[in-house]
Length: 410
Image 1 (cartoon, rainbow, N blue to C red):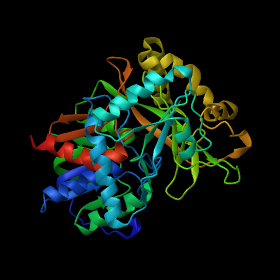
Image 2 (cartoon, rainbow, N blue to C red):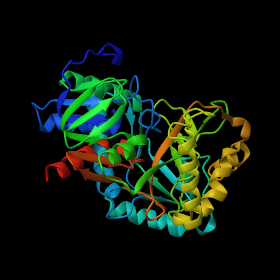
Image 3 (cartoon, rainbow, N blue to C red):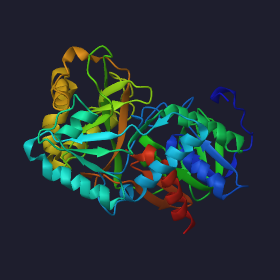
Image 4 (tube, helix red, strand yellow):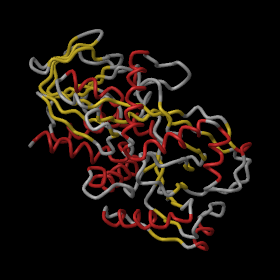
């Protein structure tokens, strides 16, 4: 069923109202329907259709759960989330493959970080294997390791984000969930249980905020999460020329500096076999600043700059070092240099322009002057707010929905 053809009910009263029809909002509605068969569930989406922001611009990588420290919410739910999503796609014959991922050291001193990743994978119940130089070349002939060692994650996969979003939409509509498009929330009154959009007013028993790039605004309209704000980072990609001659068979990632917030430039192989390089992680000038001056609101841009300066001065997670290296990868020659550390045969001419652009709705803690690296769930009056739904939120989405509803029912 096409989004445009869906005729919603004229009633605007819901037991559960979800703000945001990204993957987290849709899987939350899916889980609500499993647990509350007769509940009235409404979803409000400010855009004209699905997947126009983070969920539809997702890299399409099914994450195994390797990087996340023990005790974090990401560590608790990523492995199970990946399995649930994999089974969901298998059952419905949606595009999904366990392609596998190789993690390679870029520097001679990276073996300690490699061992730390292996230990974290074990703590999180994730299957990982060490590779020597011979095994690495057998799996990924054009990859390079600075130490002769690498890690192999066989359960990492690839999926098609929009295929999952569209299928979830159809299942939800068939189950009686009502989804309203072009409904941007302007005001929330949790005491009376009402939401006003640009066009009409809705009433709810409980509100779930899954608004992604705008989740902090919805939370603060409900009187919670004042310490947080979204600091957007833009991810730009290139596409590998199919005529390049490079033999890229899996996802290839560098051993990350776990003291920094981002994973670095890497190769991802789509379900269809296309190879993408990226993303960058450069500050965006607005929450929806995908191209040029698009999506820039100047008062907010000044706030973004102030927050970036705070981060630079406080230097959490080696943010200063990140600023001196990652931001320069906006320039193609330096981007290529970062990618060549993974695959030395790569040449600048092998990188083709790519329309793929994403924005990471990174949560910034104003009080601690730091980036928040885990998912955040905040409760308010008649409301639950999902903040910092960054990677691996798509992978975790079904397990995350179960966690949120368990927290709601307590």
